[in-house]
Image (cartoon, rainbow, N blue to C red; front, top):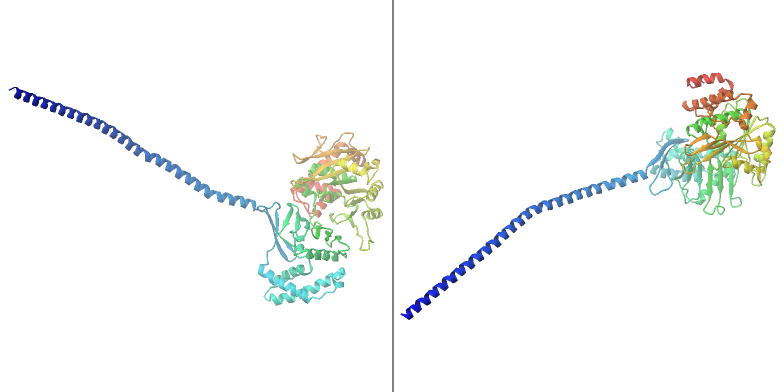
Length: 595
């Protein structure tokens, strides 16, 4: 029984232990299940968050992509725009600044002035518009045959009197060859080709074409390896597209110019200074005098000279200042026009010479013929003569100045005073009662006095008051503008007194002491200029002011009616002296004078 009980007890214990174990297992399973559920919940939460984040992420990625695409679009746009900017800048740098046409005889010429990228000097491009490259090759062949078929001796080439005969021979042969090579050419084409071949064969080639450009002041050949340079009235120094073949060709052209004026240039006489037929001045040098190569410098004689109208339009001088100079010239006050190189001294002398009365005899003396006066004036131009090869036959400015005093002149114009002898003669002419107008190298009125009164000129200071007026011309080398810089008088003591001074900021000539009525003149008692006008005219101050206003009105009338030509301006000035009332009628009504 005990065993049975024990066995039951054991079974109960076993059963109890099993149930406990089962409970424990169930509990463990539950806890594990709970933990697993918790973990699963957490994981699901995490997954949910990650899914949300995954859903959100594409938006961020899309935003980035959008930004990138925007940047790419901008960069593409900038890439597209960049070449346009470059093209624009290159176009700006290679722009044409001027273009015009003219006729060189029968030959039409096109000139284009361009500023090129990488070049510091603008280019002067010359084109013969009617000739193609193929035609040029044929014409060169014709030229070579022409030279072979026309036989000329040295005597014929060097003799100036036979120049016309030489040209006639060439012209006849050119016509024969044109018929051979260009059988279908009409009369106009034949004339054009004849003129072109004459220039190429017995002329200066492209130099002759350039010389017919009236906008040029200077033509320069420095050496064969460089292009020909030109000085343009509006654009300054320019490089052309014209080259010479070699140094031998430069020398040949210098010899042609020498023969035309009866001079020679060779190894023994490597310098040439001559005046050409049309009045142009030529200087040539041969190597080794010019070490880089042979040179030719041609200063052109202006066929369209400066006038007071052009001076006023370009603001070179004001109407008030010009009227003041006019009054001085009318009263026969001697004047010296000074300035630096290329400042416009001779141009100013030419302009102010138009104020001379038509009933007076004018003698002009120059090295190079540059002055052109109106046809209404009684004018005799004289030019110096250079010595021949034997150093004989020279006629200097001093010789001509002495000779002019025996020609009964009322006015004497001297191109430029350089030497002591010329200066002495000039002051003697003034003191003998002649009105003298000359140019002189000095940059200010003070410098004029100092140069005249010191070696090598040594003019006594007591003689200086013979000069009533000093006009100083100035050229701004940065802008290329020419202006009247000073107008001064010489006091009785021989010192300068500036009446008007150029103000570069305002770009105008300003009176140093302003008279509120006339605004042009120092009317105080110490003004020698004002007192001299009173002395010579017998006019009172009010009359001088009235006369000055009338002159200003006439000058403005010239500008408003575009009266620019030398003879047209001269006619108005001549009318002022001969029939002032009639002229003022036209001026007041602003109508042009009738022919």
